[in-house]
Image (cartoon, rainbow, N blue to C red; front, side, top):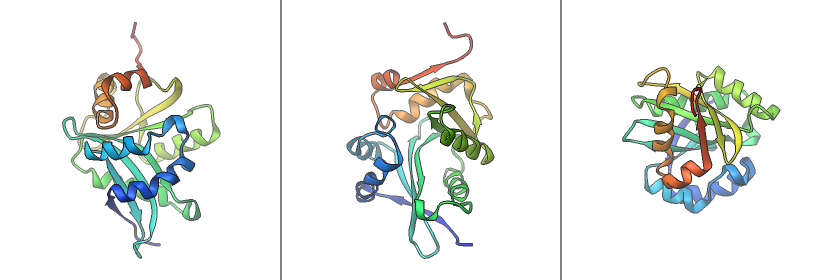
Length: 190
């Protein structure tokens, strides 16, 4: 089995990767290339999955908040010609190791539970240690699952989910846009 590792990508890598993101993600769930480039200046990271021969196998765009110590795995893809065989799980393991010492990693499964693909992704992330947070979560008015993997932080961040989500998205969007785009409802909200 090939040995994989991750490398931090730069702005030129984002420019090269972005056209692939247009195939991997819907327009409504994908920021513009300019927004992602600006986010990288404000703390976001582009992680590139590489094999033992240093060939690129996938990418992940991570929104980070050093202030709170949380990370959002925003957009992850393994290239189609090498999918399967546990590469995605290995990528998630490497991401977890990359953020050792951080509080935890959030991720969003869009169009869940409507689409079969989303249900499969949700199950995949569950098998890799992520669990649903106790809230109703929508992006752009579309139902999504918000999942969380604790690392050094608490096992459950449901009580503080709004501030955690705000902190990780702050490198990408203004606070006004965040709360127009994202809605988080918890039991007992009025």
